[in-house]
Image (cartoon, rainbow over all chains, first blue to last red; front, side, top):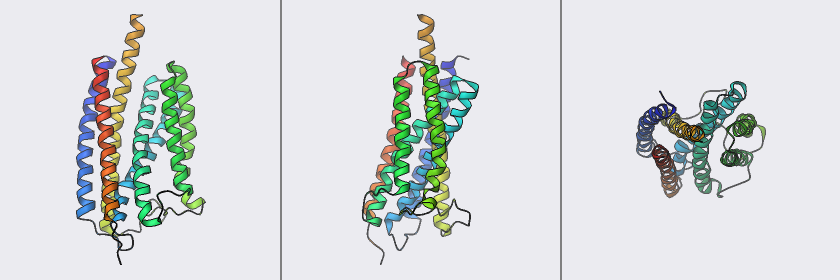
Length: 233
Length: 37
């Protein structure tokens, strides 16, 4: 099987996974908006939680996987691992855009401000910008070996940053609420809200997988074209 | 008293839907374009 055939097969599977995940997102919208109770203190704006938190989960998971794949790439020097790392980084950036837009929309009615230079918000923005830089760097480097090595170094640096983003709410005095599910004690959320949140986290995880497959297939197709051009010349 | 801020909720859900759909479309278009080359 050629690289192009493999990419096409992954793209087809990725399309199915993404379509299923997007239907799941639609289901989460219905459940969150129509069947999940309104939180009394924050009002309906609190429901932003059901997309903001899963997007944060998917985004940070994407960056974490980029870091792990970067380590693997430096060890094994397999071009496909570099392509997968870049795919995960781009998907992470897409989810970060959701985090960085829904967060301020939630913050305005609750904090009275679209943005504060709070530790959690600032580190999330830095991580996003770091990965935008990662993608720009990949865009300007033409040699696959150099591109892979340089971006792997950034990916590994960011791997250190990801757990730190999660811990900012414990390490600094911050306006951002502390985790209510991913914490040492039991989740402090009514069961109806918790089910909606966990369903959404599951759906966003599947969406991450679907996006990753599509973006990986795109990377393989580009790689196949570069190989074909090299063979022709 | 529960605050009335449903507009922010609607805005956030619409923005998230636009970003996720937009990214899906961008991936599909780029793959199609790359396949044709």
